Length: 121
Image (cartoon, rainbow, N blue to C red; front, side, top):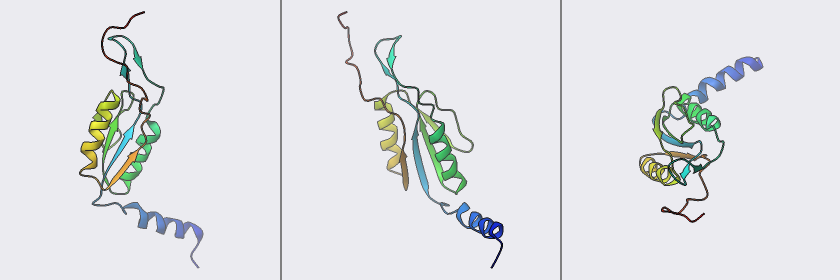
């Protein structure tokens, strides 16, 4: 039997490009829902975990679109679609979904969208 290190290296090579020819998208980070021109409802998601998932899909050969909220930075070799609100995230994901084999919905999307217009104090 081969040494364990040799076996691990073999499987790394086999699994490295298993997604060649596949298209994937990953939603990442938070969304911000504006209350007014200055304030918003959001969260502290960085999008780092989702970017790591997108990078791994890319490393395995997939063509990847990263759909990222305001805090997400571009990952190597990936196309980044920047969004701010939950509605923008939804629209971008629906568009990407139509041409994808894989979808990873990992973003921390806001649960609430404030009503537009003037509010009483």
